[in-house]
Length: 475
Image 1: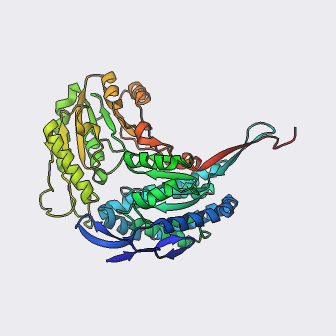
Image 2 (image 1 turned 90 degrees about the vertical axis):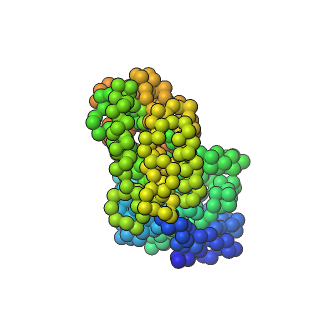
Image 3 (image 1 turned 120 degrees about the vertical axis):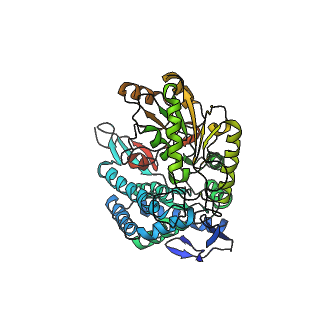
């Protein structure tokens, strides 16, 4: 049993002011694998005070020195990649191969993207011959991260904030905190000035609320549920701090009759990856009428080809969902779906051969309509809803009929139609024909999927204030 109660505050590992132990549960076994402590007001206050004290010095540190410190952090991250992979696999159930090749590398990929963005990023612009526009760090930033892609989100927040000259307090998810503890060890090894980076474990009601309402926190960057994002926004309102939110999604995957032959199978696999625990997953598959019946056959076969297994097992399979709470929620929504639509694959209960752990059968529903619960709610598990559409206008209407707007998908070999539909979809991202996004592409959504953007130069800009200075140069 790992014991990881300490927090990282002001350049040192410190014990909580008061003990408040929490067991971290291995979702493959349902057994405790570690003990952490949840922070309280004094811990939060100490971390914020350290960040506030360090801010001016770090903000005035030359960019090249900040980049050098971040490069040392990147080196430490790459050197301890296996430690990180094991931590993520244990805490949130990612199969170890997936943890190594996708979860850990998501962090290193974004690090590379930020370094590339900084090569051409300008913190000062000449607006006119005499007027200067300065881009300055916003201040102390609270970074609140989720459990589903731990290092993807930690890096997307910590790296640009520190590059911009901000100081930070990280609160990782209490469900999956072990990877962030490893990350804090890397920060310590990299030798940042005391107080520039701080980490306090805690839950949303406790440390999350304390940070989002703290008068000395200038910005909150949060990734998680829409419900929690709304609560954070309300908590932050009294101090008018900036709030950047990356929230839920209910992505539509529009597959036209002329899509490539692998589009349906690809869509099913994308929905199931990471056990369905991705906010940008294509969880609503929209199929054009003329190919609907054939697509159902392919989708059923694809779902039944997805294997489920323990996180510690090598190979290409999906693991458990992260917790009992998530498991119960997903089972309830599958049960609802079985009363609303046609069950094509999967269903309730654990897959055959697994009698413990939070394992969910890869599940597909057909004949779904947009008024059904399974089409409206973000299930956050390996569950796909398939519906039909008549024509382009109908597809766009169905896709946009949701409170979310994170990522939509379009599959067609008609380039004009593909571009036309992409323009009409109300989402922050549109992936077409299986093409992934480039390094540094803006990540974020419309509507209740949040505000703000992450990654590359867009991510750096989130942590900057704009200052106009007249008379910078003489006439």
